[in-house]
Image (tube, rainbow, N blue to C red; front, side):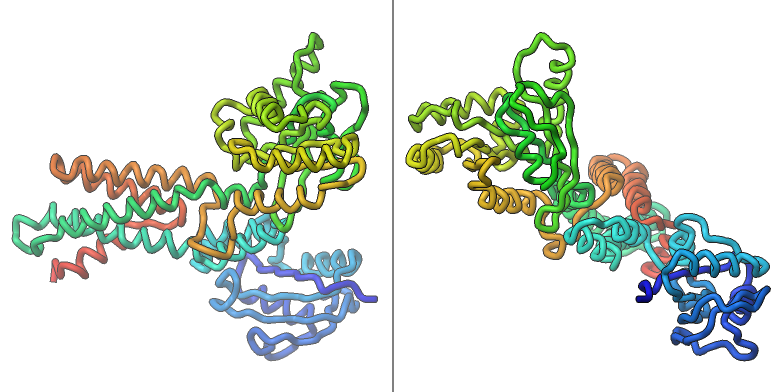
Length: 465
């Protein structure tokens, strides 16, 4: 059976004639070029030895209607290693041809204005997407939705800056209509509010892009490593009845219902004279502090049978595992009571029913890693929590996906606050705040220029007829 067709996109670094030369010599076209953007079935030959290397599709993309805006040719060939190697070697023999550098095509597309910077980042995320939710988020960003939002804000900021600078330069000549600064004040206030709402996304987009940090924590011999192995469906961690077997963080990547999860098993929490184990405990507590979701695993045998005593025991256990700040965030924690196979059926059922009625505790899951009892219900709840932490990538406004976006937007909000602070003190300093905001936003989109501001000034105020 033939292997799937592989895409080879090669653009020369010199002129159009080298693209067409490669097309003619490799596809055996002597006279006219094929119709633009139409697939043509041809024999792919070596220009020097005239040997047929493969039979595939050739597509001609004349500028500017190509991915990079330049003249381009695509050879669609079979994906065998020998075929690819032979075609690349043959292309290398054509004068002026060279392999594209990493990211060169996308960079050229950006420089030609075919893609915005956020769309470029979306394309990179799409290439590296490992889960369905990551693919959806990356595709949405690559389609330009996030870039359009930032471009809209950028356009509004340019108008604000143009109006303020026009007022500074021309208000004494009475060329500026009344109320211009009031309009700027309203626009700046609205933009600042929009950006602040955009920043209050609980880092869902960034979390979806990089993976939800889920940490398994608890006392020694509670079954943390067994739970990790069950979730991974492979022996990722050593399971032993000897307390303190896990001494370092064991990490593995998972796909839970289409959402990326970075799952970490940690050392059992206890006081120990062993220096290595104490370091493992320190790392475990540090990882819990960084976690998006903590699975606190408890041995059922240690939980009192009485509901009130059980609740008090579990509250105390949570205080020993979770940092003070996280103890009130019950939505960032799941209590996993393991080894239910060691309890009598009636005792297990009673414990489950009573703990469900206790308020102030995170959701409680009773499972057995030995018999798989309760694992399906636990996985369902885990999926719901992970989905809540990431959000739906296809609904609502586009979310932040990069830490650099967040940093620049925070600078943008601070700069708009500068405008409001200096508005009635020094209009030049207030204008500088808008300029800084525009620059910060331009660092996200990759585009900001003084010419656009001048265009708005002359268009809106008809100055310099």
